[in-house]
Each structure stands twice: as structure tokens, then as C-alpha cells.
Length: 175
Image 1 (cartoon, rainbow, N blue to C red):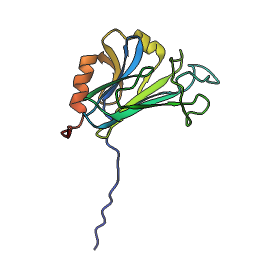
Image 2 (tube, rainbow, N blue to C red):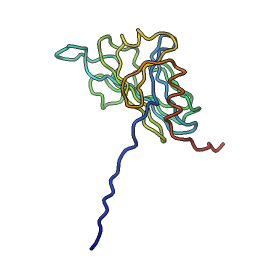
Image 3 (cartoon, rainbow, N blue to C red):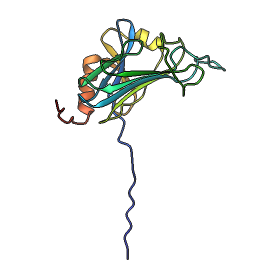
């Protein structure tokens, strides 16, 4: 009798490796990755104004920046310059599948957004937020997720410690 084995492909589990905070009044994504690993952070509109029957497009529709991580902690301001050596793309307000050259300038009040990050090592959970959520963040705090993907607010240092615990071990970078 022949025994059949079934192999299934599956994605690695999402991890609490990305957070959003405010730096100098600007929404900033924080990704814990591995130095030298190709990495990316993304923020995008996740619907229209709360309670709106016909969502109005916001200034920020889709934003992403990517490149090789210069260190194990990468910070990227959504409306600022990307980390050195990284490239940034913006989505078009009328069609998010179209890439625009126009840099977004603000979050639209009442509009839900999501953010995530990943690298060649790991994928981060999605973080849902609004401009009001970020305005309520106290200095030194971040919005992130716990290990199960549930929303969490914690200090920057606690987030970094948590993310380093869940990140896969890094390979040495060849200089």
C-alpha cells in the first residue's frame, strides 16, 4: 500500500514587529528587523470617514517605503524623507493601484488607516489607527499589537523589547 503525504505551504505567522508613534508631530512607523535585511513599511487608507455612506478620499491613500535596513530598528516618518537608501511610493487618490509622485501631507480626520511592516525575515501585524488615535498618544508611547495581533499601546522601549523577543534571529551582515 502506498502512503501519500500532503505538503501544504503556509505563511509564517504575523508578529508584533511594527508600531506607529508621533515624532516631532509626524506619524512615524517603527519596524524591528535585521540590519541589512530588505524591509518595507506601509500605511494606507482603510475606508472613508467613520459613519460616511460614501467615503471621501483622503490625502493619504497609500504610502510605502522600502530598502535595506540600516539597523535593526528602522523609523520612517510617513510625511518625511525615507531612511537613507530607501525608496518611497505614494498611491493615487482616485485609484490606489496607481502610483503617484505626490507626497501625502496629512491624515484625514475620521478616516481609518492601517499600517504594517515586513522584512525578508518576518511579517508584522496590521495596526489600525486614526488621526485622533495618534493625537491622543502621549510622548514616548506607540500603538502596536500584542503577540496575538490585538491592539496595544505601550512605551517605545517596551515595544522594542517585545519586538526583539519575537523577531527571528538575524544572520550576520557581510561588510
